[in-house]
Length: 339
Image (cartoon, rainbow, N blue to C red; front, side):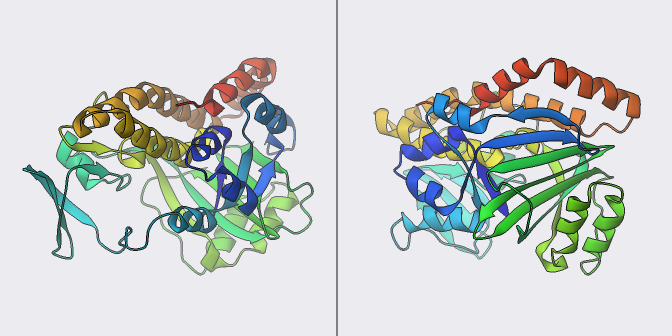
């Protein structure tokens, strides 16, 4: 799978000397084009121009490469895999974490970055189920082929569905699709391509080609969830980060980018605070207002993009075309970041 690291996250990575390795590992995007499934352009975002204005590029690369870059800059033995957290206990001198393999780990603080169904969040804020956005998603990676300028990312909007793609380097392209579906649906693992070809029948032939040349084993499906913004992420020496703190729908493509921001702001807050707990609260105060906007805006955009009614979609498309300047300003706000 691919990931787009937008200017805000690239600036965050600059603070930890990882901007250049990430840039070198992927494709620098110059434009993003949003169009109807009939091919009519709704909005074109001049990413290169914004990159100059914001002093940071937008880069698309495989997730595996991003993870490898992050891991390569950590000391050996820092990261331990295949151990899920179950619960934590507070007490001197800090926090004890209980893992599902029976192991217990003690530390001065605990930052729950354990995703949408975070056990740390549940213990802090209560067991509340996430909100299903009303649509599911598929994603895959295939050879880029003859899809034109690799510096241009595309997304098409149709009746209750979307399809997007972007080059990620080494001759490959990452793509994603969404469709309005009840939660909990599943595909036959050996028939995912056929199901998607049927669902996107009548869309441009380039989309059909992307699906056809992606092996079933490289296609994954996931329902889309988010949570309402909350005013509290932590207590004492415990806090949250990433999807554990602020899961959102992918309308703005900012989920992973904001998690990168979280990590950099957390480190900065701890550096400048005299006491660890003060640093955690500073981190939360700096992040929560910004994330409220992203969660709300991503949910609004997701609902708009997934409209099925033809008349509602006509008015939506007309509104986008007549408010392009305001749309671009919103994008610029999303791409801005500073410590």
